[in-house]
Length: 116
Image 1 (cartoon, rainbow, N blue to C red):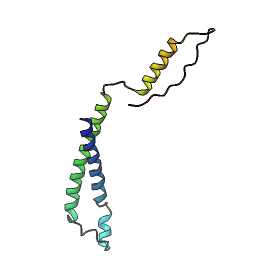
Image 2: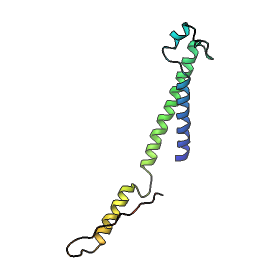
Image 3: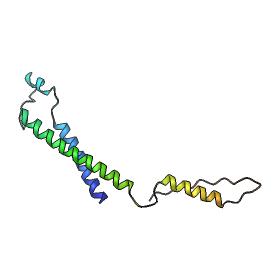
């Protein structure tokens, strides 16, 4: 499930980037009047803004929804939890198990946590 949402999320991000790069800026109409040729676009002057802005809004909505879904899925993942919490729990357990010598507790050696 998480992989599918992640694929949709990446596709939506690519769609947003592509559509934003294809759109004209607000100053493009002024440049077209001086001969830059921006008015001769594929969708015409007003057609591109309506179609492109609606498509961009759709991709942004999908991107937002998949962002929230991925955050929810990662926060409710079953497993060991945080690597920091697991490392701290191991250090506390090793400290409790280590015998005290001359009233001093031995230092617990740092262990590396190998990610799964």
